[in-house]
Image 1 (cartoon, rainbow, N blue to C red):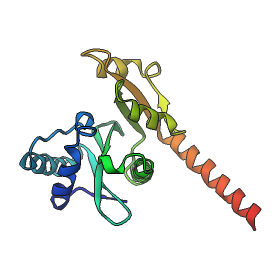
Image 2 (image 1 turned 60 degrees about the horizontal axis):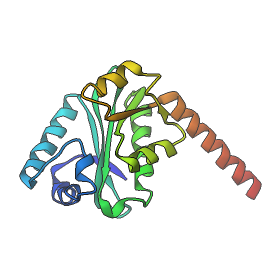
Image 3 (image 1 turned 45 degrees about the vertical axis):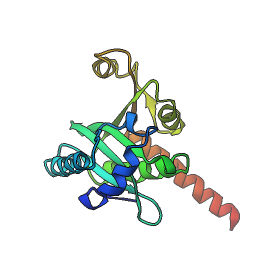
Image 4 (image 1 turned 90 degrees about the vertical axis):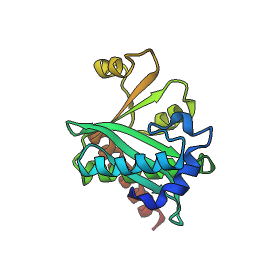
Length: 185
């Protein structure tokens, strides 16, 4: 479902990122294939320096369909950036990719908090975020950070995913599955 970023997937990903329903909402905008290659190379190098964590999202056949990244790493926290190609919207890939990424971040890489800044006009992403039971809207609880990301105007809502809330979600989900399996037996 996820793999480390590499240059081999650039052509397929560039084709997906240029769709008008995707391009306005991506953090790393590239208007040409060459620029996308350059940005991907920079991303790989930044990960090697410990500045970010970035993965390519794959479908069930191993085809690249988007990316998921944690930017601005600081104090075991960072900002989530994710996008999927338009043909993959609404098919459940976003939740699957986030779950796999959060497992890696929280339990393998030592991340404690993931923040999401979502444009207030990006209704699709807001609905997706608010659907996740481990996401907390943090406009009020992280007021300083909220004001910092909105220094140029009231553009973003701020969401937080703390490791402990995500862990509780996994525990509850696992307990519910175990109960279900016992009832079926």
